[in-house]
Length: 568
Image 1 (spheres, rainbow, N blue to C red):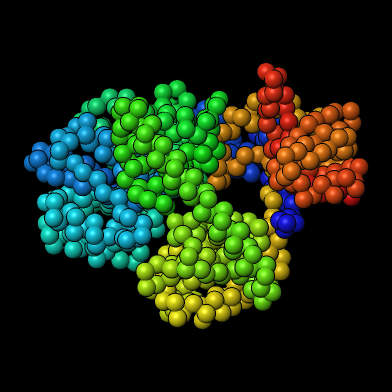
Image 2 (image 1 turned 180 degrees about the vertical axis):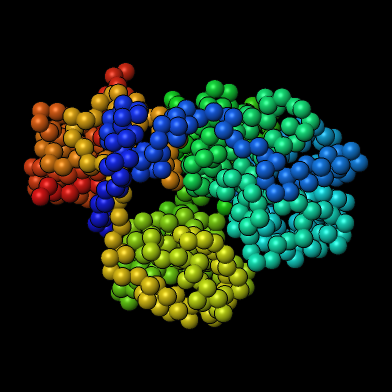
């Protein structure tokens, strides 16, 4: 049973909303939403609803960009060997794919190679094994993507062996900056680049576009890579604002009009029909790419995206599909086991945090399992498993508790850790686990109040069923792509009459509700556990997304119900 949630309507300035309504002449509800998302005048609204590729900032505004371009062109001129190095997740593999593919268009392919670390043998980011590979293969220029900003020692070793490094990263720099030839990271304190929230693939794309500009190449040579940038943005959960929104907008256009061979193969195997949106990229395409690194070898993902023959791409995509099926089986089994462990131990269940360990759990899925437990129990959660002589953990947190800060309070017990507010990873010795559990529980319980353990649903507006029209939805659709800082609009309607709700396929609820003569159907996935509440109340309050539903060639509006309560 999922926890009950608090509903909170997002507020916007009534005065600013009224002024925007005067300028745009669209539904006041939508004007309120725009203002709450920082779109508070006509020009901002125009840019938001009508993205243009020219809105992307000139890449040379990024610190060290000119230096990076010059060094790559020198490597080409001198016939040097270039190694492209990236992480094993979606952001890393797509970054490597676009960089490798682009450089192959302007340079001898024999002199370009790529490297993806093994998740289990090497861990995240730049590794000793990767640097040794570069040294042994006479690499003189190393380009890191989605990693490198904290690899001070390893980049120092590379430099001692005559290897220059260009770092393309988006993670927050540490106190010590690597001695790299060039560092492309908008989060550097002295970087003047206007947009700070690029993903790793986005930084790689900026370097590619700078190289293309320097060589006077046509934009058709690199703009199609935006489909992979959009995929990385969707999977890496970065804000869908500014440049990210523009790149995602045009990346989705590319996916839907002329997808690359690799993306086309994944779409076919995912059995996606109709228009591809950011949800498709994030929840159907992304996990298949990620599964390669979770279950086997992420180099397959790069190979898929640089493959030009569709039959070959389909074969590689099928391998990713197999990895993803194995991943789903593993995370389902481990989730069930973890829930059982928790629910059968009253002491653990009563704690403010969840910390579980089994040496048998698959390291590649413990982050997913942590997310599933957090969704169910809404507590800061860490799932541990055995990793060589150590144990490795993956953490997820709730609003109100910074997981990275929590780990800092236990850092003397940890061999290493890293992450951000809501997610982190760590390693420690098995003998320190019990002390870590106690210390982490103390950090959580001393920080959070009882109110913090109640999830909050952020609602855009309180509406009537009569407000919901095709033209209303048409404007909402133009607010896509959705994601962090531009979420899919969520509405509340109060006092609707239940005129025919029923359970379908065991876990879901089919709604038919009415208000002042206006009738709507809807679907509530995984809401069957609330059916007793529905059956006992003739009037309900619903929280929902508005969407189109097509059945037997008939298209109608429907409510995708997220939560419900009895009307007061």
